[in-house]
Length: 193
Image: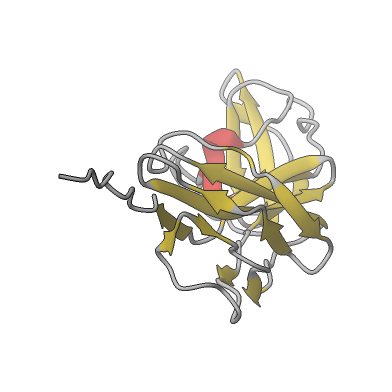
């Protein structure tokens, strides 16, 4: 009989939709099960959940004993954010002070949590680190004043929740806050006649 394959505990991000094919054992002719003996081998497309799985290897038509493997699927919920209650009328005219955002609901997941903030000026196609002041660990953020001089300015903000568990990093993005600032109208020159 071939020896049981070796495999260590594995942590995976739920956002990656992990399947049996994601698991990494050492061996050949690998079969995964949800029971220590008997049962039916799982297909490679079987979705994983947190729990214990069992892996065997097959060589020359003989299947080894099974090795138990602890699998943790870290499901991240980014939580939600909202505009502060003292925010100026939106859209702003000339400038807008977004004020402190509100942590409507905190992020959930397993591991050490870090919040980062991102902003987009192109409708969410690309995101960069937001300019302003964060207040960890509460997950709130105070963006800088937004100004518009000649054209309308629209800035989107979102919060990224990142959890690190067993050296595996999993992240999720919150809902998006949109701030709009219109330029002040320019006065036409009045000429005497």
